[in-house]
Image 1 (tube, rainbow, N blue to C red):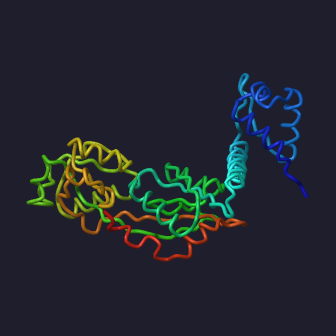
Image 2: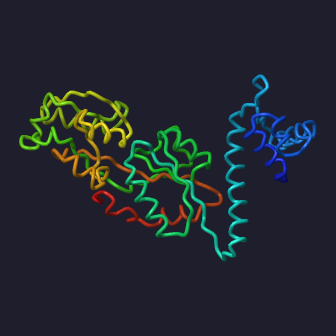
Image 3: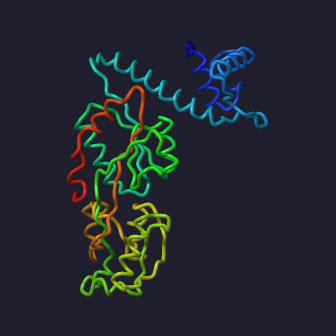
Length: 301
């Protein structure tokens, strides 16, 4: 049975952070030949090359990036252990890494974190990104949970689980110069500038389907996937925006962005995705067993 040498892990992490053995040697106060030998031994133990040499710099390989993500988590746990002991705490908060798709409303992220901390004493690390990137990190166990508006694709689904946790109604919102359009909605949308999600988005296709069914032809002036960007464009009056009601929750936003009309039948689904693990995160186990965990998220304002 192979044993992980944690000194090797520290040496590797420092080399990765510094970008060269020379700088890592200075930081660790270890001679360069000895440090280089330790890295070779570590790579031999893992059976993987962790760096590629580009000029004088060392660039992480794919295996190296995976090992570094685990090394960072181990370092964080070590720091947490010292902090717990220093504070005399009898129990520690479990760390949970959550990825949320960058196009989802930021209010949803806040709601999810609130729910998690209510249900379990945990410390949350929240990152945003594209769904495919987040699913890859989930499969590699760099993330514990991914919140997305889609399920993992077929090629990513091995070992991943998902369940729908919310359905967010989509409505048209606009700045003051568009408020009169509510009187003859949806016919009033024809010829009006709109900001919609990009073409690869399911919400974009649902909006266009709805426009077609209502026989209205708004003019797409901007395509933007991030809800925060859409809201900024809406507030500046660039065009009408089609966003979940949950996204327009701030009092000042509600005063400047008014609902012009509902896109009945157009919704954004929200999925909670997790990965099979030999040692499950207790926070994830709680989230997976509470069936009505995010009930009410759809209408929170």
